[in-house]
Amino acid sequence: MSPSDFARVFKETLGQTPMQYVLAYRIEQAAQMMRDKHLHLGEITLACGFADQAHFSRSFKQVTGQTPRRFRAA
Image (cartoon, rainbow, N blue to C red; front, side, top):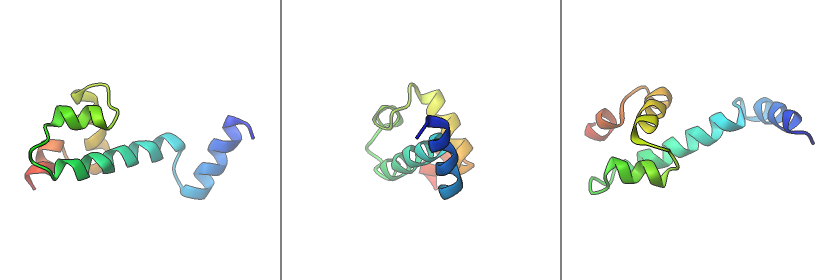
C-alpha cells in the first residue's frame, strides 16, 4: 500500500488524517499530564514530543479551543 493510499483509507476510516490523529493523541496525553500540578509545562511539552512550548501552546489551543494555562486553571 502506498503512503497516499494509506492516508486516504485512514481518513475514510477514522475521519481524520494520520497527522491529525497523532496530534490529537499527543494533546490528550498532555491534558492528562497537566492534571498533575507538579509538572511544569516545559516538561509536558518535551514529554509529548513538541519542539518548544510555543508550538505546544498553539497546537493545544487549536485542538481544545483553550490555552494550556486556561485548561490547567479550570
